[in-house]
Length: 434
Image (tube, rainbow, N blue to C red; front, top):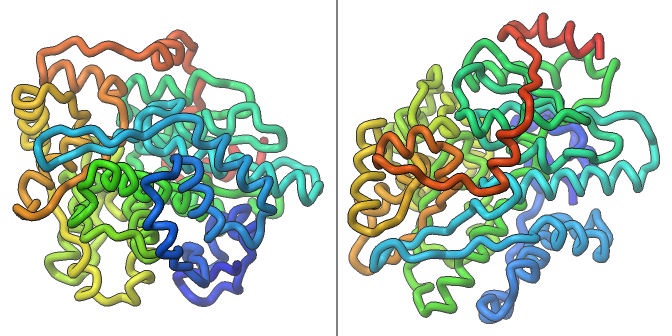
């Protein structure tokens, strides 16, 4: 399958080119030329299939023309060596727990899948040379990508993160690894980190010096596999006899996760509608209200992984619906919450249901509480384990939540990071020296 740019001036690219380049030459994001509708038989029997079987069917629709069946199956099954259960929170609200992977965050699937797909292409082409992965993170992306690529031959990862704006545990997950992972602590906000990555891709001298790609959700191999979650969520709801009128609510920052869900919907996944839940960074919410997309400087909030003022994947959503505001608002609604509202939601949910929400999941839960209709069933994504935000969660709930063993191991390591300004010239000079 070929991939085109959302800016429509770059040449078409193969899957390998789209994955290795990350960003198209005209600064657009790659989109598959075709989005295949899956068979009715698949949907009729989806509740009888395992997570891996479902994911392989979806992956084959996107990548089957470019990756041989045996290799693709191995990539999918290796990526999904964990479960993502749907758990009841209230009578008509469920959560899709996406924090059972290696770094306890939803981005584990996309990062692991991309690492293995990129390795597949490196081995297939046997071209040698080092591929350098640049990734900007507002929290969970960095840990998922760093751990997904850790020790992978032929690949070096540079994780750019905003100084002082990720949780201590999140920071431990990508600054203590060493080996082929370099953490770069940028004196700025997430948008500055993302701008450095995008500028690097557009710099001719830098690209002649080293082979660059991105593992942010701008990369098709990072965001598309996240569609697996939504098919599996539907399968679980169908097993419970609750698959009619399902509303999916996705806490949204850079919008890769909900974008993958919308691709699934385009493939025939029978989700009734979607809700994009924002924190105070409400750029998409304002677009839904006004039809105008106006990026803003990002604001620091309790839900730091959603602190994005110019979400990259808005371009894909806009392209998917041909720029039609009416089409977008007919399928997607929005919600936005202040830190005070997030904290209040966390306290009330814990008191009423005994369920511990992290700040991001709290946005999804409250959006469903506010917007769900009487005949609908809601599923929100709980995108990261609350222990990743232990200081915030404990302070809000007056609790002392347990830290899973996997997180405790990260905390034993020694921080290794490179201090960096938000100026591209400084970042470029650093990379040229590598």
